[in-house]
Length: 431
Image (tube, rainbow, N blue to C red; front, side):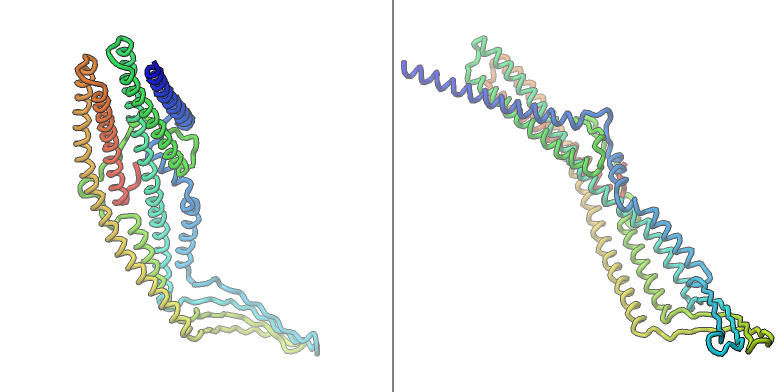
């Protein structure tokens, strides 16, 4: 009698523990689902291209782009002018009113005209054009950096969504099995221990769903931080996955890559600065044209004379040498950096292409495995209903099928992410 009470009490504790686990997992899943619904229940979806455009719209490079273009145009106009600096007007007057006051007067008005040094104007124009190109290539390089961040956040979010959808499917199947076990328990075909196993599988699936949905929320918030638009809609299922188009077997020329173009233009600017510094060995000469009107004493007739003068500064010496050496050093550094960047991007391009091919093979294998797992699930489900297969085997087959589905969904995401990384390595923006 005592042993029967003890067994009954042990079974009650087991049932109570399983019930508490189910309640806790269900509460956690419900809370996560509610939070997810609050952040994803929006009227329309978001594409990768839209996410990139939204992220780029708030970048400081875009905010300053118009001003940089204006500065580049102004610099080009200045390099095309006839003088390196603006003209200057000089007016002087001389009188003896404060001492002798004999009526001595002299007034002079002159125009100072700065002159270009030999070769300075042409090199200034070349430098201004290089700076204009650098503004545009710098913008393209900034777009690629933003695109890399958006792509990384986007595919992390897609992975989280795929895991959440797979976990939800596993939960639905576990609940269906538990309901079937409950019916057969009432009919006397299965034991209470089988019901506990089925309920435990449901609890584990609910905990997995809650964890997956929390990961979706974290990934979604990371993406929202980039786009900075909380009202944008983010759908919750992987069925609307749209991969970027493949760039093709050859792809664009590496020399057209935005980051390489930015470095090339920076190197061109540095070369232009070095060439201009080489010509500016002294300050600019200055031509002065002046006219003078004067008289010696009161009553004398006014006399007028004209003056033409040229001011030629001496050489800058060590100052010029320092500017030239600094410009050459900048040019050498950028050229070396350009060579390193070209090698790095070439390696990334080859790696991304190989990763895409590998992901395509993995997807084919994962889809084959998922198909076989679905067929096996159907066979064992029928066998379980007929009483030919025990519950642990049925749960094992269900877990294997769920893992195969998760791997297939992940493989689809990984192939799309690999194509996106390949396009990134080639310097292509999201579309």
